[in-house]
Length: 515
Image (cartoon, rainbow, N blue to C red):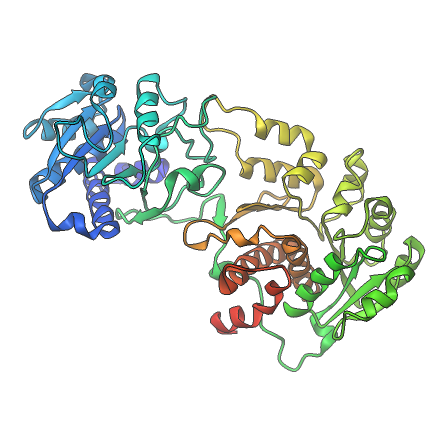
C-alpha cells in the first residue's frame, strides 16, 4: 500500500494531503456507520496521534469531528511536532488553528477510561492514530500504559475505541504483537483501513485486537493483486458437474481407514469427498474392520486393503486418481502405506493428514524425498512443528522488530521445503504452493465459525480436498476451495455443529453459489 500510494503521488494522480483527508473522512464515516447514534449529536472524543502519517490521519479525524459535527475533541501527540512529515505537519497546523495538542507522554495521568477523571464527562470515542501499519518496534513504554488502561476497562462501557489502519502495537505484515508483552496493544472495537485489508487484520492475533474491520476506498488504483490473496467465492475452482459426464469423469477417490473401532475419521472424510462431487469414493479397509464399515455405508464403496501390498494392487487401476491417507489410519501402519502411495506408477493426487504426517515426525526428510507436485499436506500446528521444526521455531520466536515472521512466511517456506502444497490449518488457514503462490482462508469477523472446533472436522476437510482432486482440480485450487467450503458449511449449519453435519450442508452451499 505504501508503494501504491507513493506511485499515485509521484504520478500526479493525487497529493499526500488529499489521501490523508480522504482517510480521515473515511474513519469518521466508518464510525458513524458502526455506531449511528454518534452521528446524531455532539459527543466527546480523544484522538491519539503518532509521529507518522497515521498521526496525520488522526489530526484530520479530530478536525472533522470538531468542525463538521460539533464534537468536543482532545488531541494528544506522541512525538515532536517539528519532526512530523510535511503532510502530517500540515494537518497538525490545521488542527492547531482550532484546538490545542497535548503531550501523549502525559496522557497516562489523565486517562481513566471511559472518562478523563471523576469530575469530567465520559469519553464517547477514543481514536488510536498512533502507529497503524508503520510500526516496526514494540509499542513505546509511555503508550503501553495507555494500552493497559484501555485493556482493563470494565464492560459495558459507554465509549468506543477505533483504530486507524491497525491497532497500535500490532505488526501489519503478520498480525503478531511486537515485543515480549502480549498485551502491549491498544485494543479496538473497530479498525478502519484503506483500499484493502492487510495480512495483520487476518493472521495470528490480528482479529482479536481489531474486533471488526471496515475498509474504506480512498481513490487508489491497484493494478495487480498482492502476493497473498484472500480466498472467497470468486477464487473457487470448478464445482459444477460436467454435462454428459459419468461417474469416472468426476474421478475416483480412495480413502484408507484404520482398524476395527478406528474407522470413523476415514468415513467422515469419505462422506465429504462424495458430497463434494467425486464420482466414486472407495474406503480401503483392513479385514478386521470390514463388517464394521459395511454396516455404516451405502453410497460409498468398500475394498479390503490390509497393508502396502494390497494398496499397491489397488493403485494399479489408473482410474483411481485421488488418495487420502491419515484420518484414523494409525501411526504404526501409516509410514509404509504412505511410501507405497507416493511411489505409485501413475501418481494419483494424494492428501496426507493426521497420522500420515505424524508417522514421519522423526524423519520428515524421508517424506519430503517421496512427495511430488500432486500432493497436499494438511497439518495443524502440532503436526506442522513436527514436520518443519526449524520453521515452526522461527514462527514461535517473540518478534522484536517488524515486519515479524508470519504464518504466511512459514507456510510458503514449508511448501518450498516439501515441494508440494501445504495447508496450515487454523482460523487463519494459510495455503501455499512450492512456487510461492499463497492464499489465506480466514474464518474471522462475519465468517467466524468457532463451532468448527469439534472432533472430526479436519477429517471432513481432508475429504473435501480429496474429492476435489479426484474431480481434476489442481492441488492449490482443491485446497483453497475445500477450505472455503468447509467454513461455509459450518456457517450454514451454525451452532451445535458436529463433523457429520458438514458434508450435508454442501447442497445448500452449492445452491447459494448458483451451482
